[in-house]
View 1: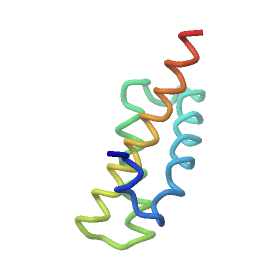
View 2: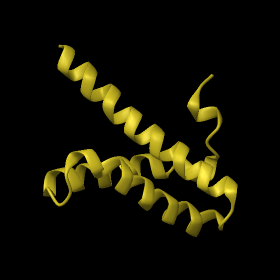
View 3: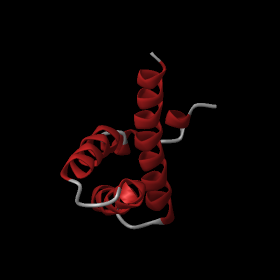
Length: 83
C-alpha cells in the first residue's frame, strides 16, 4: 500500500510546504531537531483545518501529510548519506 493513496488531493500541497518549513526551522536553530516533527504536525493540523474544516478526517489528513513530509525527508537524507 502506498501512503499517497490515503492522502486527499487537497492536502497534497502541504507536503512540500512542510518540507520547506522544516528546513527553515532546522537552519534557524529555533527548535531542537527532535521536536521539528511535532512542530510540523501542529502546523499541518492548522493548515488542513483552514483548508478543509475541522473534522476527524482533517486531523487524519494532517497526520498523514506530516508523515509523508518527514518520511520523504528522512529517505532522501539516508540515501544521500549512503553514497
